[in-house]
Amino acid sequence: MSHATLTATIWHEPEGYVSICPELGVASCGATTDEALTMLKEAVELFLENAAQLGIWEDIRDAIEAPQRFTAPLEVALP
Image (tube, rainbow, N blue to C red; front, side, top):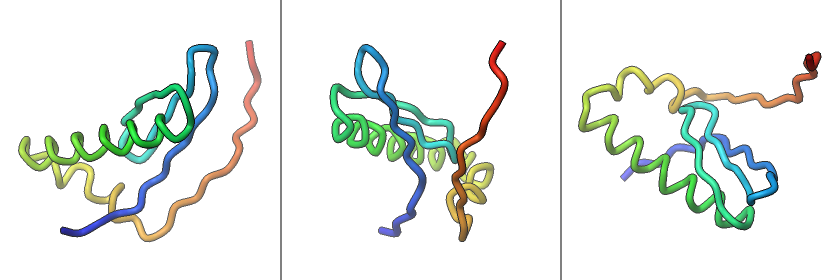
């Protein structure tokens, strides 16, 4: 079994913590940061399993196999 390292972003909301994998657009949540990360990992693995079964693996391969990833804060104007 091969492995990939993707990005997880987690933030706090009043109901708990939200987690997202920006490469795939997969999100989850949990009561703690650890739970949010665990739930995101499960959601991403299920997404990848389904992508392989549905034949859309090639559509997401570049996002998964990218050798470099960069994250940065993005300041935007609010309405």
